[in-house]
Length: 334
Image (cartoon, rainbow, N blue to C red; front, top):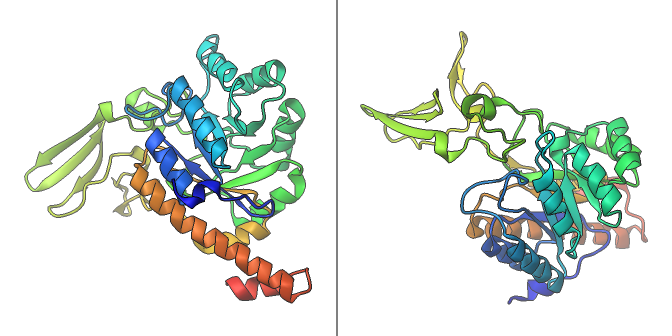
């Protein structure tokens, strides 16, 4: 193993939280410099419930041990909504997670939070972005009712909005996405995929499931479809993307283009100092469906960028006699 396995976590650093869809990706994230790693089970409790991904109970236990040995925080995502009157699967998984040495479990379902808080009061809870909590009153409710320790904020908030929110929700920590899929739908409320396929990202853990994807050649044009819907048409020589409905190309009276959402991924690495100044505790990388090579490359780059921010801030504190001013902070990093 490489030396980054024993990398110490600074208390004043922003936490780099990384995805792992497989044990191999988890190892890659550890070696690339992750501070924490989140992963889920191979079932509907996981919002990335795709074939060939995720962890069995035995694999999850081994993953938690590997993280702890490397001084990395293990987080487990149970971030879908349980079926009404049939919560057995979600509760079973919570009961198992409570037997592991996890840092926290990431949850959105209010009934499951109630179950976890009452049956396993020592189990730390993080509020999933799927809950769409984006104002102080919502966060305060989850804190008072279930003692959540962290909230993952929706990707639609501006830095100014994040800063305003973090100032009001203490001691609850704020976590934001920094890289990966840019979902601008109301997170936790997206219904497009379930409308097209009958399978819900929020209940079944699958967005644009592969079982409903079709590619058809029409002359020199490649057509991608999801269920009965044409999502895109690609001319000869044009790369054919995966048919996710919200990222498709559609016609309107005014134009043809990506009317819902541009397929370009989120990359907030240029504003890391601003996010830190806004009071963000953790930066989350999306991508549990990605391979280990992708995870390793992205995490290494972000690790280098974050360490650079830490080094710059330490320099500022030294120059200012232990109290960096906002002006010095911005001169170095903007």
